[in-house]
Image (cartoon, rainbow, N blue to C red; front, side, top):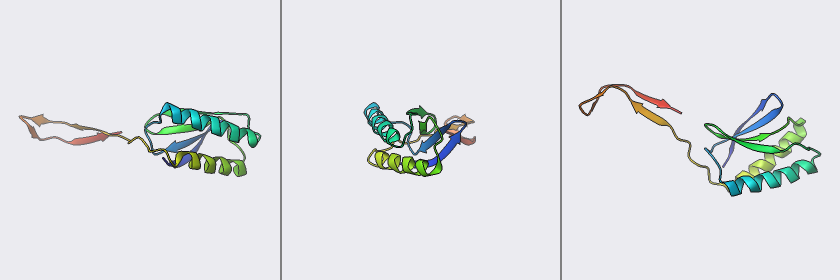
Length: 109
């Protein structure tokens, strides 16, 4: 699994991944390891997970830039061995008559 981008939202930092979700055992392991790592940096806030179109790992603060880079690096290391769950798209074909496709194909995330 990889981090696609980092987004700062109000008082949180969202690490957007290339996965649809994550198994509970992986979530627990990452949460435990990251919270210990955050404490070693002097950060008392934790993390949680948010599932939308992409899984987001949410850091419950916006740390200073030097610490942010260390956190990003640590998360990258922890996520590397995890196989991402495929992102899916729903495809709808409109205007199908008598088995013939006469409409438009729409892709919805």
